[in-house]
Amino acid sequence: MRLDALRAQPGLLAAVLVGPDGLPLEMIGEGELLAAELAALRAWTERVGEPLGAGRVTRLALTTEQIEVVALASGPYLLGAALTRGLDTRPVQQALAQLALEAAELPEPEGR
Image 1: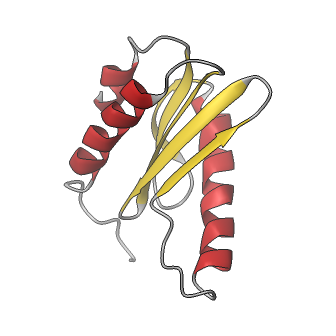
Image 2: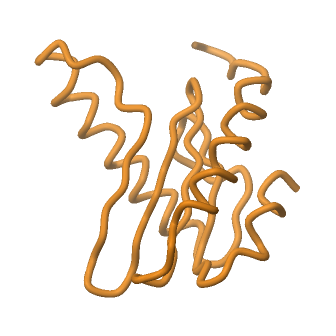
Image 3: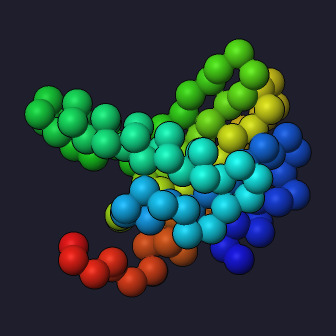
């Protein structure tokens, strides 16, 4: 599994590889919920970013009272992780960046 590199990360609550249709291709923990929310956020960023000429959003990070979420886009795919708030997210960001390079090698989905 591609996401296995994230399993040992301290405080990892969920991780997901999301296909262009918003469905999880791989997941750890509550990946279905994370996939759905990341797909919705990606759609929102595209609606906001493109009309402003900002281009595509390639990295997204957000913090709530209890968790931190980091996500990267790689072509039509999204990779994301949810972690316990307050932990250093840099190791997860580095692992996601490596996984994003690998996701770039995935075949383009049909119909795109």
